[in-house]
Figure (cartoon, rainbow, N blue to C red):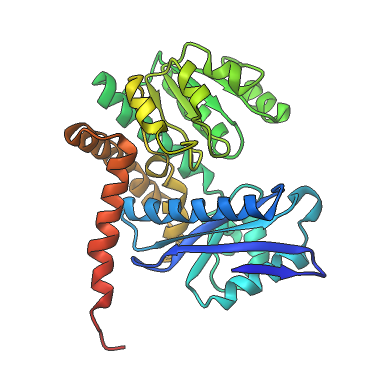
Length: 343
């Protein structure tokens, strides 16, 4: 659905990929896309990723996503967010929105003044607050599972982990890695973000850009910024044995997963390991309890290990194994929705 409100400057697109398992849920990304075509391509890819993510996480939710086109630093206003909320409301619950790049829990509170289908709200409004906390925790669990699969040891102590992007999720991931004793190297387009991480963790080393980071001797590479992080050029120089990060849609194009396998690099599928945030905001729909949500997010370890083991058994890349499992659940459980029940 294309959403346009001239007076507030709102230009947004809402994409629903699937409601087979339940109402679609996915964040609203506020980003200065170069063209509307770029925005459409991104929201379609992201909505599919959310459907697969919810299915693999065992949630009774479908997949959707939204993008607001523009620079949030200059365009975000109460009027724009409330206008957007009216569009979400018009879908009647087929889509629930939440936070993403460029949007935060206080923004969700504003949207909720016009809309009943909002999650990821602030704690003072009964919400889950910052979903990046459990997103990072889930990625960390995915890393431990990948380490178990590759090295037969869940410990990350002494391993060198490169984190590209230390914003909302990446900074929490760095804290978890440092706490375990990993050697962490970071980069980000924001010098402020890098400075905050290094100040909090003086043992962390920073490099100027992603090109420099991926050429470093790494055990694990964690892309935690925008999509398309795993390109031919990156995979061609990457020394890491494992790729496990929070970014969505990390594979730059079809075929990259095969190149990763040829180079002996184990890829923990992004939508498998970064589902902690989705689990957190989904828990809010039935009355949020952080400890309960964290226990559910901890199961990402088992899910990731299961995907990697299935990939090895079937002789396919992990991304294919994850897709098959998500599609199986959408097909088998979604089929039950065709059975009539009295209202």
